[in-house]
Image 1 (cartoon, rainbow, N blue to C red):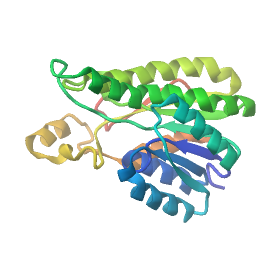
Image 2: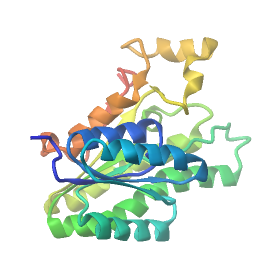
Image 3: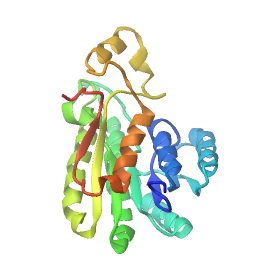
Image 4: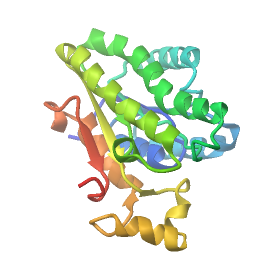
Length: 251
């Protein structure tokens, strides 16, 4: 039997990159998938992902919605419950970066990163815990970052948002453990996606690579594998933890 047979999983920000890899990985293990994307430019990729997931023999639906908007999240979760009947897993993956030195950073840039990366986690968790509490079961997985643990010059907004996710995760695990709802975070290191093309560019890429004990950048599927572990009963006694999936960068 597959690890997630019959489960319903939400994945935010899943039209591409790590989110898409997670949605496919959970679907491969039997989960029905509801996933979000935010921009019109991602609609084609979202449609292709929906088709690919359905091809795996499970149910899937793409929703164009903004996880950083509380009302939109409420509408989305209600639609998922109406369409799928339950929510067993919530992967809060939606995220952006607007890197800049603090001296040059605008308030708007800060707010955009906080709304998408951190407020979205509150928005979605607030909505999904009600059906999970009713079912007395659930796994919430929040995508943090190694940058949220160690910081990085020029990424103060991104680091702050990802560090905030860690504190939120640990607090929610304490609040909801008695209801058999687990909440964990993943802290990816440098992962090759279309958002991180700079990793392979010249001296900058070489400098990043030299810091990683395993000697290579991560792959989206490797983050998806960690997500699958936390979504499944293989991690049934794990909550409130941060798993650094970073090739040893945080040693």
